[in-house]
Image 1 (cartoon, rainbow, N blue to C red):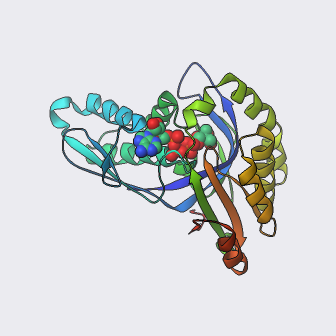
Image 2 (tube, helix red, strand yellow):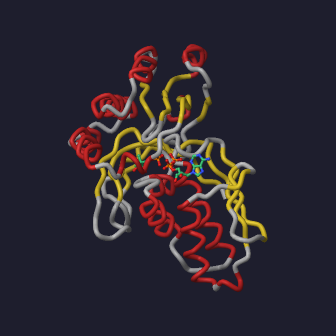
Length: 274
Ligand SMILES: Nc1ncnc2c1ncn2[C@@H]1O[C@H](COP(=O)(O)OP(=O)(O)O)[C@@H](O)[C@H]1O
Ligand SMILES: CC(C)(COP(=O)(O)O)[C@@H](O)C(=O)O
């Protein structure tokens, strides 16, 4: 089961009593690189690109289905193959939760709602707020309501295939340290305020990138190094920091691709996944 990676450009944190209603509003897009989920007979272990890991949202999804299916029928290990690492703002943890929820729901012929189980797992583990919803919808999405039921307005561009997304992962940034910190929450929400309405009035990819870069700079989430590289990428449609990671992303045309790659250290070239 393939789930696309997802880059958030800007977002607002909305916490409610119910995990299902907790989430984020904001904008971003899914990529043609991401995470594949497979299950095999085993003992509840989780492997990520061959290495056994302790991944909270995957364990939460496993526990949910164990209760539904019955422990005696539930002897499986999870194997993820991912193009991007965890903790770099590529929505990898969301892809892991959503992929696993779909695979288990299909394999055990359950009547559960994978998107809800995966979203709740991400919220409980503090690994994401809006990725699962955006990944289920794909494309370029503006999420107008936090959590579920989902309200996503998709940007359907005729020329979407003309664009490349180039990603450069510089390092880790754990989501939980930011989305639980009252100071960060305040700064993020003040900076995100009004951006959603502005984008809904002028829903273009270029404007999404402009608002995202403004968000990255004005929240203080982007480091000086990242800002400097984004400035060097000003000749493209736009560049910013992937939320919430120490990662740069840039949208460019084929003609600009070589120049973009020459500026970045480890460029990974993707397309937007519809
Ligand atoms: N080797 C690893 N590297 C990074 N994160 C890991 C690793 N193993 C487990 N994790 C867990 O993966 C989760 C990553 O979540 P998050 O920062 O939201 O990442 P993402 O941006 O991929 O969604 C954290 O809960 C972290 O503890
Ligand atoms: C930005 C973030 C809160 C975290 O994203 P990640 O670090 O990729 O888990 C995301 O879930 C969102 O709500 O848009």
